[in-house]
Structures are given as structure tokens and as C-alpha cells.
Length: 419
Image (cartoon, one colour):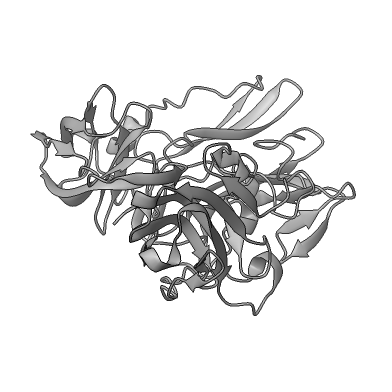
């Protein structure tokens, strides 16, 4: 199948949706995270609380585009699957880490392929042919192969379809990212987007439409290099890319990794599949003591009306009492959420100002990927002391809606280093 559009649709969601009998197909993707049977909506019309307090939402069924080749719903010896093989995502928007709804179960079982939406939208829609994509019925509950031969499209005179022999590739080395992280390559322009993961320091792109592209490289999801490349029909262009080296720093402490993901922090292992008020969540806020705590002691999100604050306790020698720089990386903000900083109960960091607004719920619907803003403050020596010190990190933002719908942000990593 494929879908061709010439303009943005109203109400702003382009999707394939199959509604099926739940009695036959009771289990959704990442079941039961999107099964709202017997549950009551408490945030908008899409986020539900069940009688046992657990939360459900169709957004909790999502996976990153780069990983989401096959998803489906299952029953007794039966499965129905969406398969997004090859270039199925090339005219969608959002890049490799974008996530959107896959399934929802209520009175019926719903299976989706979202091509475009306004959910945590970070770039304009692309227009043209979406796909090809496939829907497959099997007698197994195991996902089928994501390899689907759609080359027959080339003989059907389908508007917007570009066969393989009218495409090109990019290949080369991708270096500078530790093997502890994924190295992800991403190409995009106004007409198309592509991605791949490097292996052993090298990569080969998918077959791409001819044209000029912005090229980015990520450490997991943290941008570490950017360039451009031009692809021509029938050719493989060589393009080597290397991560921009981190400046040499004397670090006092670092919590987490600047990798564009919050999963190492408290509740980071749960946030994809449940609401921050879910009873399975650990208590938000908390205290992190340098030298004895782990990232799991530091909350993955802080809010201006929910979530409390996070305190970092650390010690300085007399030689370390000098101007230090605090760096806080974030992955996503909502309602103008950004960090506040207070040192030793006396010195407060300046308000960095509201980030660029993404007008879409994120944290409460399992989203974590936004602009990736990084903030820094220079802490004067006069605010520090030999021995015990503390930094309290909170949040400021709009409180029009309250709770976790007030201003909040998601943490990527935190570092204090010698300026």
C-alpha cells in the first residue's frame, strides 16, 4: 500500500488505521500499555487511569521509527502486522527517533501506521508518496520479517514512486563515537529523510532519492556532527564524518551521559510506557550524592508544579573553589519548562529564558525527544566553599494547566567542570 498527499490534512494526522475485533486480537503492541478497557480518561481524551491506578495511553505503544519496522496485534494463533520496510518512512517527518501511536484497544483493537502528525512535531510535513508499507496476516504471534519486496510498484505508474534504479547511496566512515553508544546517521531535506546505524566505524545509507541533503551523526540521539552531501542517480558517493571532539575539561562530576536519552535516570526505565503519576513510578525529585549515588537516584524529569527538585551534594578541595561551569542537557521541554539552579542556598543562576515551544504533550504521553537544549551557568568562586556544597535543580515554566502539564523538562545529563 501507499498514500499520496499534496497538502496537509485536517486535523493534522496522516495515518493508516485498521479497526478489528478485539475478541480475536486482544493483545496490542507492548501489551497492555495501550489497552484502555475499563479505564477512565484523566488527561485529555487519550490518557487513562485503570481501577488499580495504572495508566494507559495509545502513545505508550510507540517505538522509534529507526527501530519500528514491524509492529502488530495478536490473538490465539493469529497476528496482524504493519510492515514499514525499505523507504516506508522517507516522506514522513520527525527523523529516526520520532515515535507515534501503534495500537489501542478498547471495544475494538486498533492497529496504526502513523505517517505524519502534530505529536512532538519538530519539522514541517513532507508531501508526496508515503510508503510503500504493508499489512500482513499470519497464523503466528511472532513478528514476521520486515523484508517485503515492493519492487512491483515500479510497473504500476504510481505517482511519486521512485524505483531503486533511479536512486543513489552514501557510504563512508563514521568515527569518534565510543562503542558504548550507537552511531546513527541521518539525512534529510524538504522532500525526504533517511537513516542508518554505523557498524565498526563505517556505514552505507539506504537507497535515496537524488538531491542535496543535510547529514547528521548522533551518539545515540545526541548530535555530534553535521555536514551535507549530494546524491545522484546510480552512484554511491563517499562521505566520511567524524564526531566533533569534546573540549578538554576538568570535571568535578557528571551525572548520566550526554547521549540524548534519559533512560539511565530515576523513572527513565518506565517513562515510555506509563504516566509520571502511575503508582509504579518511583518518588520524583530526590538527592544525589557524588561518589555514592548512581544516575538512578536523579529524576529523569523535573516540573514547575510537580516532581519536586533534585539536590546534588558534592565536596570541593580548596584548590577547586574557583569559577565552575554547570552544564545541564535536556531532551524535551513542555510549556516553557527549563532548569533553575541554586547553589549552597545563596547563589541562583540566571533564568536562561524559555526554549522554543513544541506545542504538544510529551512526558505524560511517553515522549522524550525534542530540541535537545543544553544550558550552562558559570558559578562564581564566591558561591562555593571548601568541603560540602550543594546544588538544587528545579524547573520554571507555565503553570496554566498544573501538575505534570505545567512547565517541565526531561534531563539528558548534568556536569560540573572547571571553567
